[in-house]
Image (cartoon, rainbow, N blue to C red; front, side):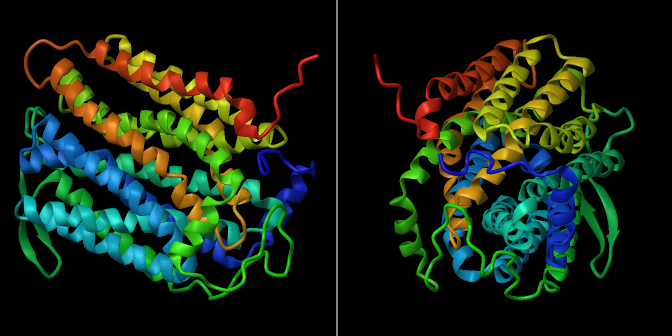
Length: 455
């Protein structure tokens, strides 16, 4: 497949030198990505707990709303990719960050389920819009010859924010723990302008996220219009577009490209691997708090994954930057899928930490190369569209996997009574390991190679 292979070998120092010649907008995008990563990951780490603790949803009810949020975010991302290409990077970021700020304010102050779910869906649209536009920003603002490192930095920055988010969650939970450390209790806190207000741990997480979105919004205003490091240059495999088109015309153009459909097959298989991260966000928190107690530092353990990514991604990129992208993605997906089986062992601090570590090794291999792949193979002016459509297989996978999360928790890891949590993780592990097996069997189709001619 065009774009799956690297197109030449250059010294590492030359790649880094080219990276430093990128315009200031690349570093503004890094700052915005870092800040928003804290906001979005702190929400993801606590969403299912917020739904159950603050609004009384049971396992299946909470999983149902998580499915709605996560699936709609992926589906909206498809449309947002086309709209992002029409709006441009600067305006796309301004709109998406504004929606994120409003959504989190509604979630933090919601007196009941109606306002809470409204805020969740507003934030869902903002999150869906922000993701493809940020990916486009890193392509537009980075030097073409240093793009692999730019996207690795992008991924590391997101994970630094995710690590901070984990510690933020524990910092917000700690003041709301009861004296015996077994439950969370509401507190009255003094807020600027508002004054004394009844607050819970997870509402506090969302209000901090609203402040962070406001800061990122202000930084985005510093981005200059019409900054593009590729303007006037030919891009391998790209067909320049002639002026702006309506979003539906952009979609039709993209779907006529054969390369796009081979790319979508790979994304479909990777969706099964990405569901492991969804289970770590939405299934694992209730699992560990029920098995190991409410005082378990869930946020700190969630931070293991992004902290490991911060260390691993630059090393892995330097070691594998001349390897075919498909080979690296396959290896990473196999390691990530295998990590789930560690959770079939009895729950302990060691097994939880080992799971996050091996998941991180796999993710450090496959994820940055998939981000780079999306931006590299996309024709100019279609970057956000490819990024958005790449999430469509993930949308389909979520419709099955996330409702399964609620059912598995209620069936094998209920709040009270006997538990069989190892069975729950065995089911999840078997559903994930299908991906690398099929990826290996279909490698010639994914790469667009003709089958060998029989002799």
